[in-house]
Structures are given as C-alpha cells and as structure tokens.
Image (cartoon, rainbow, N blue to C red; front, top):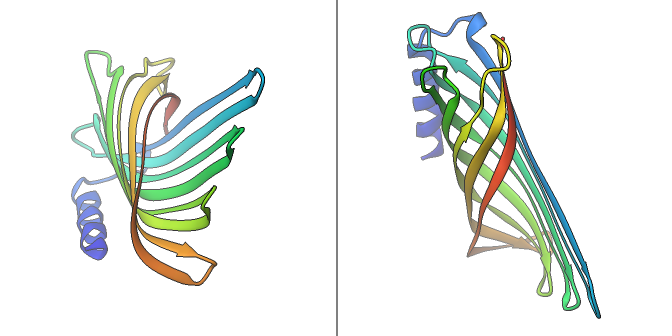
Length: 189
C-alpha cells in the first residue's frame, strides 16, 4: 500500500506543473515545560517540531503539496517513575492558504513512516507505524514571501509493531494522540 501512495503523490506533483520559483519551506515549533514542587516533584516537558518542503502549482498558488518531517519528545517524571516518548515521522503533506489575504491556513499530513522509542515502568520498546496530522491556523503575511503565526495541530500516531530487547518483533497496537498549538513560519522562495 505504501508504494501506491508514493506513486500517486509523485504523479500528483508532476501534474501540477511545478516551477522552481514555487518552492515553499515551512517550519513549526512547540515547547512546553512544567514543574510542580510539593511533597513530591512532578516534571513534564514537551518538544515538538516539524519541517516541510512544499511546491505550489502554477495555476493555483493557494494549494501546496510536499514532504513533511516531524519529531516529538516527551518526558514525564513523577514519584511513580519516569516515562519518555520520542518519535520521528515523515510523509506527504498538503496545505491550503485561504482568505482574502491568504492568511488562514489548513493542512493535512499522512506520515507513512513513524518510529518511536518508549520507556516506562514496563520497560523499553521501539514502536513502528503511521501517523496523521491535521492543522488549522492564522499565519498573516509579514512580507511578500513570509508568513508567521500560530496554528492548532491534531496529531495521532498509530503503531502496529513493537520491538523489545532489540530483537523481538510483536504485533501490538499503541496510539499516541496530541492536540497542541504550534508557532509556524512559511517562506516562499
């Protein structure tokens, strides 16, 4: 199934008549840290980043198609133990800028490859699967080539393979779902 999706995306890019001046780079970042000190210490941190290279079609400058790379790192340190999760994901991304000034933003990314490292009370494991990301935001133009703003992101990673002890592969279902704000920059070359 993965090869058919990649073939479809390659064909879609060719059909949009891409030119060199239609390349768009997009960068997003979210960081959160929380520390509660009482009779016991609780510490939570989240770092999420994404980067995409997209291309606009000649006739419709509002639609873009390209490739996305994302990373997530979380750490929860509580009196009951520490839990960490870190993932990297990559796959195709579709974006749409709309509104009178093209300040509103919507996007959908389907990451064909998602790999995570999880460590908790039950031990350590590597998870493999796919993820889906939907984004909506307001990124006003700062110049003729630059948009800067914020977006709300819905992210769900579904893992169907688990590797433990670096050798044991099992079919196990694990899901990580997040909703978070994201500071974003879009630059049009």
